[in-house]
Structure formats: C-alpha cells, structure tokens
Length: 375
Ligand SMILES: NC(=O)c1ccc[n+]([C@@H]2O[C@H](COP(=O)([O-])OP(=O)(O)OC[C@H]3O[C@@H](n4cnc5c(N)ncnc54)[C@H](O)[C@@H]3O)[C@@H](O)[C@H]2O)c1
Image (tube, rainbow, N blue to C red; front, side):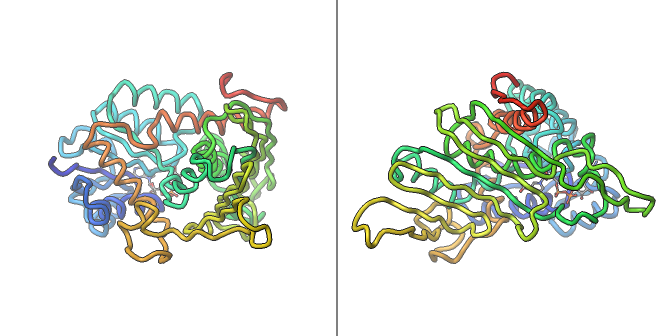
C-alpha cells in the first residue's frame, strides 16, 4: 500500500512521542506500512513551523480544521489536552480520517460514548494511547497469568502513584478544573492502571471507592490568592471483576518520590506475578513448585523471547524505554489500517476503561457499590 499520510495535533509530551513513533515504526518493525508526515498543527504558528521542521513534517498550521479537508491526510494523532479530544476526534472521523487519540478519551463519560459511537459508525480505525499495554513485559505477564503459570487467579492488586501534584504550593493550573481536565488522578493515570488490570483479569463488574482532594486549594500563578482544586488527587477502590475475582486499585498524583509507579500483583493458587513500571523491563514470578528450600521469586528480564523486544534490540536485558512503547503502539495502528482490522485498543475498548474510572468516581461520590452496567 502507499504511505499513510499523517497529521499531528499538539507537540507537547505526547505529541513528540507520537512523532518519534511514526518515524521509527517501520524502521524498527519492518512489516509496517510507511507513513508520510504531512501536517503538524500547533499554536501559535511560529511554534508549529519550528516543530514541523524538527519532527520532519511537510507543512505547519495553527488551524487543526485545515487537516479535515486535506486528501493527503489519512490518519490524525490528537495529543492535545483532554477537553479538545471529543471535538477533534469526531470531526476527523466525520472527515474520513483514522484517529490515534491520547487518553483519557474525554472529560465526561457521555462525551466518550459519543466518540465511541462516531468511531463505530465511521468504520475507520481508532486507537487510544494506552502505551503501557504495549510493553512486552506486560504482554508476557498476561501470557503467564492466562496460561495458568500461577494457577487460578484469586486476587489482583494494582497501584499508580506519581508526585507531579505532591507539592501543596504548586501553582493552580487547568488540571485542577473539572471543565478543562475532567477527572483528576483517575483520568490522568488511573485509566492506565485500569487498562493493565482489565488486560490481565478481564472486564470489571463493580467497584466500591473513595476519593480525596488532598490539597484543597493551590496558589494562583499571578500571586492574587488561592483557587480551589475541583478534582481528586487520589482514589482507592475495591474491584470485582466479571469473573468474580476481587482486586484493589489505588491512584495518587500526590505521592512524593513516586515518578511512574504503575504496577500490579496477580495472586494465583500456585504463584504470583509482579510488575512495576519504574522497572519496566522486568517481571517477578513466583511458582510454588520444586524444593521449598530453593523457592523464591525469579526476575525475568525482557529479551528477544518477549516479542516485539527483539525488533528493537537483539540482546536480552538491554532494556526498552517509554518512547519504544509508543513505537509498538504506532506499529499496531498502522498494521490495523493496512489490514482493515480493529486496533488493539480502539475507542470501544477505551470506552470500557472510561466507564470504569467514572464508576469509581461515582461510587466515591455516592458512597455505595456501583456496577459498570448501571453507568
Ligand atoms: N499515554 C500517556 O502515557 C500520556 C502521558 C502524558 C499525557 N497524555 C495525554 O496526552 C494529552 C496531552 O498531554 P501532554 O502531556 O502531551 O500535554 P502538553 O501540554 O505537553 O501538550 C499539549 C499540546 O497541545 C497543544 N495544543 C493545545 N491546543 C491546541 C490546538 N487547538 N491546536 C493545536 N495544538 C494545541 C499545546 O500547545 C501543547 O503543545 C492529554 O490528553 C494527556 O492526558 C498521555
């Protein structure tokens, strides 16, 4: 097939990750359609022009709607703040463009539902930025768990902690405002944890949750006083999966010292698997077999035996990085467009994650167990 024409909206943390992923996907994987980096969208225009030159895009604009009518663009990456995702994604789908949108889908569950319906009606390929599910260490954990290597799953525990809002004197920003950010820690990082836990143990049935705004106000950047933080800094939940398995969930954006502590333990009747994103190239596996005196966790370092690690590097234990996960994500998306199949984490799969985080928030607000079916 001919190269897929790409437009990128936004060039912050995620915009750069998408740009690098497009540039590297075919070089790393080989069996991936080529891309042409057609249009970069950013504001103001001089910044768009500078970033287009840096990332290697043909053109730059400060008007994202310009990509809608451009026949050279078949795929649009949306890496703008959450409040812009719905409008941009729906417009791109209506214009016949495939969409790779960052998580969370939108500010509200209703918005996410509209996006999912638009995606289904369009027949186009969509993907959400759940990069941690692309980690070969994670897919290996899924194989171990689902292949019975730890027996029957009896408990699933997950956590995601970061410290980007730990400082009580950090200036107030849009992140604290429901209208601009939507959920707090749940929407920012809790959704990643749900993507891993449901990947391991299947869909959720219900949740019982609490959430808290740990720092109720923050200083205004212009020094005129303090403003309220409207969304949660932390949330905890008891989870019941559709399989009946129980689990736990904790998320905090105010956990000093934790930088990307996204992880889980899966407890089985004959063993356990543990993962920690701060050590993203390894798993801990315990199997209750052999001599008791020699029993203990083994550390599995990812290697060419854990596809697609070998596409990046022929040597075991040499380690992938965060941006490599985006390359794996991009490759899955480009193959899905070529093969006319669904991408691994499309808007329908994403809506289930969105439903879970909003169920956790609702349970916390209403002080009762909430089933996902009632959302
Ligand atoms: N998958 C992940 O691990 C991950 C990590 C961080 C952020 N995210 C998500 O990615 C999205 C972006 O977050 P970020 O950290 O990259 O933010 P960011 O602030 O670093 O970048 C956002 C960019 O969008 C640009 N932008 C805003 N409005 C625009 C418009 N109308 N037209 C063109 N450009 C516009 C901004 O100028 C900025 O450069 C969010 O939805 C966030 O939740 C995902």
